[in-house]
Amino acid sequence: MTPLQLSRLVADAALDRKARNVVRIDLRGRTTLADFFVIGEGDTDRQVRAIAESMLEAAGAAGAHALSRAGLDEGSWICLDFDSVIGHVFLPGERAYYDLEGLWGPARRVRPRRLVVAAPTP
Image (cartoon, rainbow, N blue to C red; front, side, top):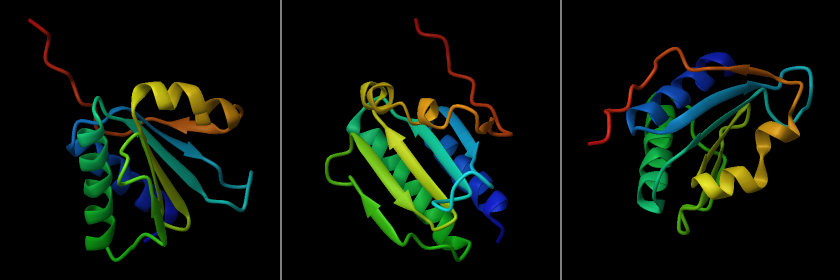
Protein backbone atom coordinates (compact mmCIF):
# COMPACT_ATOMS: atom_id res chain seq x y z
CA MET A 1 0.00 0.00 0.00
CA THR A 2 1.38 3.40 -0.94
CA PRO A 3 1.55 6.28 1.56
CA LEU A 4 -1.14 8.09 -0.45
CA GLN A 5 -3.48 5.09 -0.24
CA LEU A 6 -2.77 4.65 3.46
CA SER A 7 -3.46 8.31 4.16
CA ARG A 8 -6.84 7.99 2.38
CA LEU A 9 -7.66 4.82 4.30
CA VAL A 10 -6.81 6.38 7.66
CA ALA A 11 -8.77 9.57 6.85
CA ASP A 12 -11.80 7.51 5.78
CA ALA A 13 -11.59 5.50 9.01
CA ALA A 14 -11.61 8.76 11.00
CA LEU A 15 -14.67 9.93 9.08
CA ASP A 16 -16.39 6.63 9.84
CA ARG A 17 -16.33 7.66 13.51
CA LYS A 18 -17.63 11.14 12.70
CA ALA A 19 -14.29 12.94 13.05
CA ARG A 20 -14.58 16.62 12.25
CA ASN A 21 -12.33 18.84 10.14
CA VAL A 22 -10.31 15.94 8.78
CA VAL A 23 -7.42 17.01 6.59
CA ARG A 24 -4.49 15.22 4.99
CA ILE A 25 -1.27 17.22 4.76
CA ASP A 26 1.06 16.17 1.96
CA LEU A 27 4.60 16.34 3.34
CA ARG A 28 6.33 14.51 0.50
CA GLY A 29 9.60 16.26 -0.33
CA ARG A 30 9.38 18.52 2.74
CA THR A 31 10.57 16.21 5.51
CA THR A 32 11.76 12.68 6.15
CA LEU A 33 9.42 12.44 9.13
CA ALA A 34 6.46 11.17 7.07
CA ASP A 35 4.81 11.53 3.69
CA PHE A 36 1.40 12.51 5.09
CA PHE A 37 -0.21 13.75 8.28
CA VAL A 38 -3.86 12.90 8.76
CA ILE A 39 -5.41 15.28 11.28
CA GLY A 40 -8.91 15.26 12.72
CA GLU A 41 -10.80 16.01 15.88
CA GLY A 42 -13.52 14.64 18.10
CA ASP A 43 -15.82 16.36 20.56
CA THR A 44 -14.97 14.24 23.61
CA ASP A 45 -12.03 12.15 24.80
CA ARG A 46 -14.18 9.06 24.26
CA GLN A 47 -14.82 10.01 20.62
CA VAL A 48 -11.13 10.88 20.08
CA ARG A 49 -10.21 7.38 21.29
CA ALA A 50 -12.90 5.79 19.07
CA ILE A 51 -11.57 7.68 16.03
CA ALA A 52 -8.01 6.53 16.76
CA GLU A 53 -9.13 2.92 17.27
CA SER A 54 -10.96 3.05 13.93
CA MET A 55 -7.79 4.31 12.24
CA LEU A 56 -5.75 1.51 13.84
CA GLU A 57 -8.27 -1.17 12.85
CA ALA A 58 -8.55 0.00 9.23
CA ALA A 59 -4.78 0.23 8.79
CA GLY A 60 -4.25 -3.14 10.47
CA ALA A 61 -6.83 -4.81 8.22
CA ALA A 62 -4.86 -3.49 5.24
CA GLY A 63 -1.59 -4.83 6.67
CA ALA A 64 -0.22 -1.50 7.95
CA HIS A 65 0.39 -1.59 11.68
CA ALA A 66 1.28 1.36 13.89
CA LEU A 67 4.94 1.51 14.83
CA SER A 68 3.98 3.55 17.88
CA ARG A 69 0.97 5.19 19.47
CA ALA A 70 0.74 7.85 22.11
CA GLY A 71 -2.08 9.48 24.05
CA LEU A 72 -4.66 6.68 23.94
CA ASP A 73 -5.10 6.77 27.73
CA GLU A 74 -5.66 10.53 27.96
CA GLY A 75 -7.66 10.99 24.76
CA SER A 76 -6.92 14.69 24.25
CA TRP A 77 -4.28 14.21 21.52
CA ILE A 78 -3.59 10.80 20.08
CA CYS A 79 -0.68 10.28 17.72
CA LEU A 80 -0.45 7.13 15.58
CA ASP A 81 2.77 6.49 13.66
CA PHE A 82 2.25 4.31 10.59
CA ASP A 83 5.77 5.19 9.32
CA SER A 84 4.92 7.07 6.12
CA VAL A 85 1.62 8.36 7.56
CA ILE A 86 1.13 9.88 10.99
CA GLY A 87 -2.39 10.20 12.32
CA HIS A 88 -3.28 12.90 14.83
CA VAL A 89 -6.64 13.01 16.59
CA PHE A 90 -7.34 15.95 18.89
CA LEU A 91 -9.90 17.53 21.10
CA PRO A 92 -10.67 20.93 19.46
CA GLY A 93 -8.80 23.00 22.07
CA GLU A 94 -5.69 20.84 21.81
CA ARG A 95 -5.75 21.04 18.04
CA ALA A 96 -5.93 24.83 18.10
CA TYR A 97 -3.18 25.07 20.73
CA TYR A 98 -0.64 22.86 18.90
CA ASP A 99 -1.67 24.11 15.42
CA LEU A 100 0.08 21.41 13.38
CA GLU A 101 -1.50 22.79 10.22
CA GLY A 102 0.14 26.16 10.92
CA LEU A 103 3.55 24.54 11.47
CA TRP A 104 3.36 23.01 8.00
CA GLY A 105 1.93 26.17 6.43
CA PRO A 106 3.13 25.83 2.83
CA ALA A 107 2.42 22.08 2.62
CA ARG A 108 -0.50 21.05 0.45
CA ARG A 109 -3.73 20.19 2.24
CA VAL A 110 -5.89 17.46 0.80
CA ARG A 111 -9.48 17.22 1.97
CA PRO A 112 -10.93 13.71 2.26
CA ARG A 113 -12.86 12.48 -0.74
CA ARG A 114 -15.86 11.66 1.43
CA LEU A 115 -17.67 14.44 3.18
CA VAL A 116 -19.61 13.95 6.38
CA VAL A 117 -22.61 16.19 6.64
CA ALA A 118 -23.57 16.88 10.23
CA ALA A 119 -27.25 16.77 11.10
CA PRO A 120 -28.68 20.15 12.03
CA THR A 121 -28.94 20.80 15.74
CA PRO A 122 -32.47 21.22 17.04
